[in-house]
Length: 178
Image (cartoon, rainbow, N blue to C red; front, top):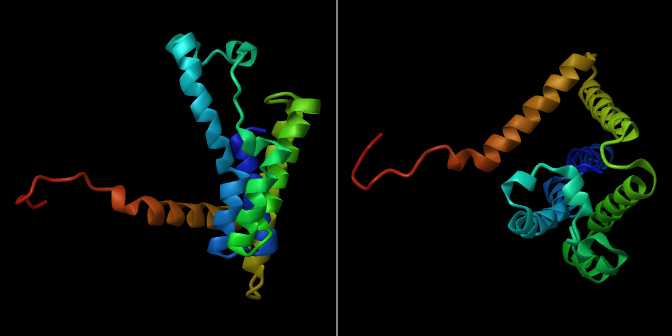
């Protein structure tokens, strides 16, 4: 599946199970960020194909490169098991398992960027909004779906600012003031 589908699945998982920050981090790490291994193959692909081949999907699919690391195979259980014990939770295994299942379904049945995958993407966005509305309604006041969508966007924006807020300014030479 495309990365955004993996991300949405993990976000729905976080909402359904009401995961705290640590659990959500573990879910994101093993459900989404394991796809960073594709970047290493991309470097080798660019050496062979050059920048002109970087956006050529057919060339990438025809390439002999191994795009996925061991984390995309059942053999990664030897890594995931100890990680679950280290985190003292089953969330990494669940997120990793969902990632593998989504990739398997895409490869075996759907194809890359298929219509079914796009329907799944939309369904996951709708599920997130419905779950957020349910969370908002728990205070006794009724909320609309657009309010729930705005709440999700606001939460995501706050997290991005929290994560990258320190990177906002550029380094200044010593002795200068803004």
